[in-house]
Image 1 (tube, rainbow, N blue to C red):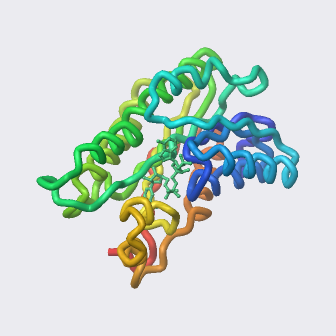
Image 2 (spheres, rainbow, N blue to C red; image 1 turned 90 degrees about the vertical axis):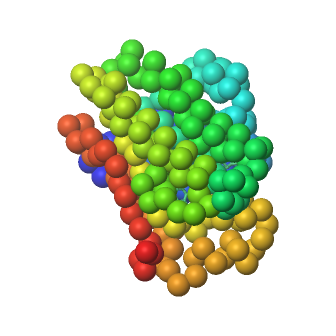
Image 3 (spheres, protein in one colour; image 1 turned 135 degrees about the horizontal axis):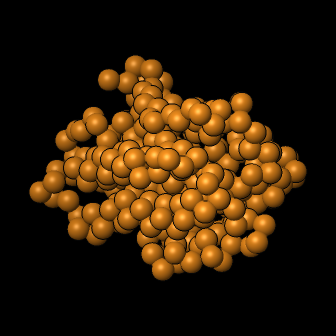
Length: 249
Ligand code: NDP
């Protein structure tokens, strides 16, 4: 770790589970204070207590559904004064729902994926980037996926949303040229988290099959990539970290 994030504010969406939770733990380990966002308030509260007592950092929790654009827009103005100056934003909340052919896609699932994986990223980035531009510092890290470029049958909407995240991230980097704000995409392969359980809606066999025959990535592996990007020297802007699980095709 080169750039110190001690006492800096890191905002993570989807901090209640998987990659977001692991990232919160690793940022806390290097002394960053945290804004933890997700729907499951008790999980956030528990994480906050654990991180505060283990690492002596401060955490603020915001329980909200990122699909609620009004609440998302109010998130930044309503932060307590000590948490206003976000140094690192990690747009991580996201999901896949189902693996149906495009002609059979569930319309409600389409909306949830587009709103969570795309719209929320654009809206929160806008809200946080304003302050970063005013302070001329910051780092926006968006969690994309190998699915942005590796498309597969049954992935029309999820792959489309992650292609959006990668394109949005690169376009944002262009928008912020000339500022000290860095922009990074993280594009993981198969990571063993609650992601598959949610995708297959409780069908445990289908969820487990995703990881059979491969050595899946862990949430900690991806958190390590996020913290790596955030702690490079200020002149280094990591554009995209693409990683596959070993044995993953
Ligand atoms: P998890 O299911 O473990 O975590 C997803 C997180 O997103 C949870 O904290 C969940 O919190 C939050 N979330 C989901 N929907 C909403 C919402 N509407 N409002 C607020 N928070 C929400 O999955 P991962 O950690 O694996 O996924 C994190 C990111 O990584 C996602 O963007 C995913 O697309 C991406 N990714 C995952 C891969 C994998 O194989 N697992 C591979 C490549 C990318 P809560 O339910 O409490 O709201």
